[in-house]
Length: 288
Ligand SMILES: Cc1cc2nc3c(=O)[nH]c(=O)nc-3n(C[C@H](O)[C@H](O)[C@H](O)COP(=O)(O)OP(=O)(O)OC[C@H]3O[C@@H](n4cnc5c(N)ncnc54)[C@H](O)[C@@H]3O)c2cc1C
Image (cartoon, rainbow, N blue to C red):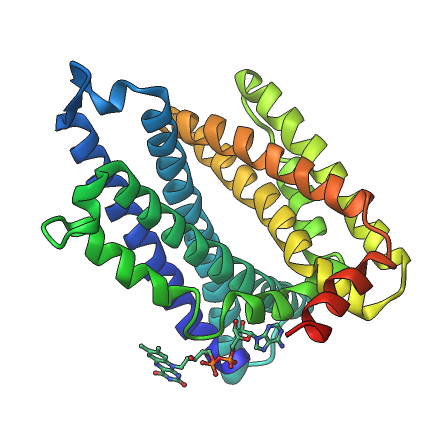
């Protein structure tokens, strides 16, 4: 997996571009297409899709920059270490950023490529029947997005790479660092909601790992990785909003969405017993 690190960062960038393009195409079409006497962007069902596409594109970009920062820090320190002996503090930093780059690359590639697919899907949906035809760019975006969560390791393989950072607490420690940043008073409620999401994520991880069953861990792995990602993406957007209020909409929309997703994951894991695995496995492996 390590060999593919750079390539996976590249796919994250490709995914950000696709998510952004899908949003722009969807927005342009929804602004000009009229139905029932008004532009379709005025219908809640349509502007909700667009707001979420905007939020996913902004969250994906924030994740790309954060992951690239960790990779850069690691590489710079690694290059210096080839020229001279690192100071003890620098050695600790090298270790820290190496671990963060290793942790953020799979979760970032996995989530941003899934969001590129979701945004491309929604862009086609907003175009209605026209989106199915080759006349509009969104049809091309839809085909292009489909490879991002397959090559350089499918999302399922990104989860395999990410899960040890769930069980060893790399993500949780980083999320708690984000939690400790000073946020503007007007962001208090969003910050509080992210803390609630993190608490639920932590309990869900505990419940799965307490069972001490590797198959159960693999079964729940994607849910846990997604829950961690919602907390991370939410905090990155909160930090962006802390610096520039133009990100406020995306932070509000993403955290509303992410909190509902984390609650869903929490409920799934809470009501799932080890015995239930047999229903899933037995059903598909025994029935043709
Ligand atoms: C257009 C294109 C360009 C490509 N370019 C390159 C390239 O330049 N270099 C290169 O090396 N490769 C390249 N590939 C190959 C690509 O990286 C692989 O197709 C991809 O990694 C998936 O592997 P696979 O096709 O063997 O699928 P498989 O590994 O057979 O996967 C099939 C399914 O099983 C799931 N699965 C497999 N293992 C596990 C597991 N352990 N846990 C859970 N689920 C699992 C997968 O998620 C998937 O859903 C390219 C592919 C395409 C289509």
